[in-house]
Length: 410
Ligand code: ATP
Ligand code: MG
Image (cartoon, rainbow, N blue to C red; front, side, top):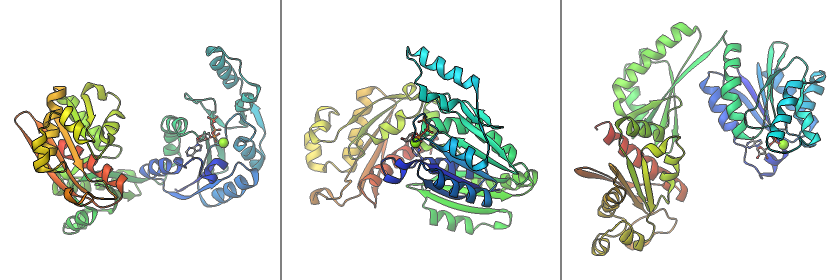
């Protein structure tokens, strides 16, 4: 089974809004064993939607459309799909009442143009929207499934996870592809592949590698009878885990930051961050995790020399002698912030994100990451390639991995 995706929205074609729905849906569908065949972006225009929808229905079993379910006149996806399929729109009283309550609850009168969001294509299942007024729709069309989802990612994603995924998994029962992703860090994808190729691979089904900065997703894929496939995937997972050990940090939807958060929370430990070249990126990543207040004490963006001296209590002579981008400074930042916040672990990140380098400090991409803890500290030197942003991202990823390895006792 395969799927087509159509993102509807003229704003996506002007570049005013970046299309992020494709990435999310492609990943989630792929993970559910339903690869995307084609993804297109079209304007809020019936002819454009017709061309894309007809093509999708011709080629795929499942067609998902996002966007254009809003209350304004330019949102026409619902009406266009009804016209293309030759089906009428019928009022769904329940959703109309819900919208009216939503507005009265906020002390407002529902604008008339919201009424159109309560009209559903005849025979469709209405998917409630907990985060907005545009409901989703699921339509059985001949042997196919057509799904309309709201455009705003925050609304679309929740609806997809809660209401859509179970339906399409059920729809796909006959011929599922099973995918298990092992998340790796600390070894590049080519080295990973070399290591795995050296194994006796009779028991390994098809594998693919997706690199994201320092992380590599190792995907094990099988198709056919679910029972025997899951057996062979489990078997492959056992072989790979035995070989790769703690290079594997998680699986499927796990994230490195989420995993570190779990480890810290589980052990009742706390963390503080001193960031220079990463500019608060690691703090941002950590605070994206719900419940991070349980373990995250706080951070300092010690970008300038003064900040390092005044806030992190690092000796000026030491900075003079060793340089701001050095092992000693990263270590002192980690120790300093750990003491400042009274945390169990402190992390220090200092480096040169470029694009220009201060010759005395070293080459662009030189980064030192340190972790300090009761009774010691550890520092790693990195030489990263890529632009400013990717250097920041990889420095933050690396720091998380260094901490993870400490936490699992490596
Ligand atoms: P609502 O009633 O909540 O507005 P809608 O289905 O009408 O739902 P649209 O009007 O198409 O949604 O889009 C609203 C906003 O959602 C857009 O301005 C944009 O910010 C965001 N959005 C829509 N499609 C995408 C997409 N593919 N990727 C990222 N953001 C999107
Ligand atoms: Mg729109």
